[in-house]
Length: 163
Image 1: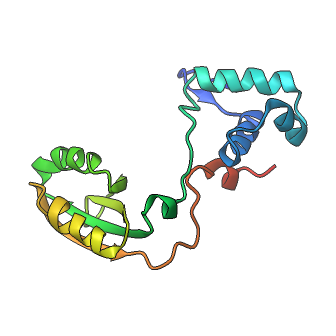
Image 2: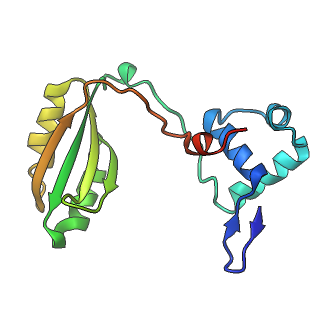
Image 3: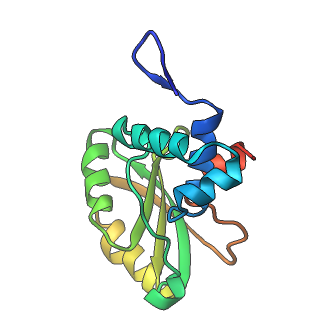
C-alpha cells in the first residue's frame, strides 16, 4: 500500500490478497492468511491494521440464509421518480426493511431496488402498499426472481484478484 501524490491510497498485491481472503472468510486468522499468501504474519497484521485505519476496510458483516428469516422470495424493481423528489424517495426506500438493496442508475429509470419477503404475495403487498404510494414515485416495474444462480455479496476482490 502506498500513498499517491493526491493523498489517495494505492493498493498493491499484498493488500489485494488480504482483501480477497477476508472477502471469502472475514474470520480467517492472520497465521492462516500468511500461510495461504506466503507473506509473513507480521506483514499481514500491519497491512490489515492500515487497511482498517485508512478506511479501505469499513466493516465486517455476516451473510444470512434468507430461508431461516422467512425471506425466501425475491424481486427486483425499476423505479422512476419525479426529479425534485428523488432524494425523498431514496430516504423512504432506505427506511423499508423489505428493501434490501438500492442502486441509483443512469438511463430510463432512477433506481433498481431489491425486495425480499416470505413469498411473492408479501412482496406484492410491499410494492402496492409501501412503495407505489411514496410521493415522487412516478413508475414502478416489478421483476420477480425465479432462481438465484450466483450471489457474491462480499467477494468483489476475490473475483478480480486470484492468488
